Image (cartoon, rainbow, N blue to C red; front, side, top):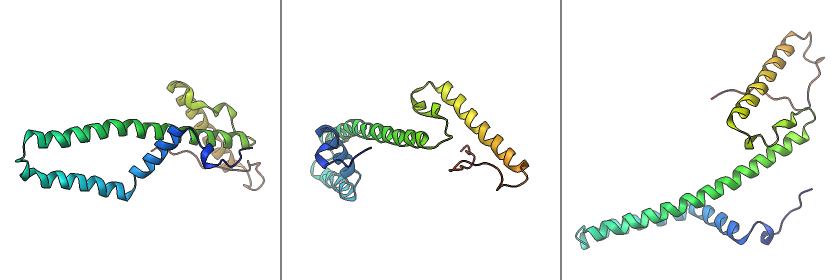
Length: 153
């Protein structure tokens, strides 16, 4: 069973730092600071006579920030994705009639994922047809958790 972790036990110092950075950078004060930097740069234009150096400052700054943020955001997305997959895997394991072959399916090749998707959708479609032909919806055996058919976007 998973126990509650103290703040100091939640990942390495690097992952905690990245998590704190991504949390802060998505906040309203961070957006205001970014807008302030842009405003200060724009206001300084006339004083710098709109020189090449003036343009180079903002170009260099935005390039460096963008470069670092790509990696910070990707790290955060990877961690979130793994955590969501773990939660979904746990739900699959907890449901009595769930197909446990789907645990860890995200690691498989795209062709296998598509095949499993078609199989699950086919099963759901067949179950719906069986429910429609049964004399009474109450007499039909049902899983504890019944889901609606998947809909493609």
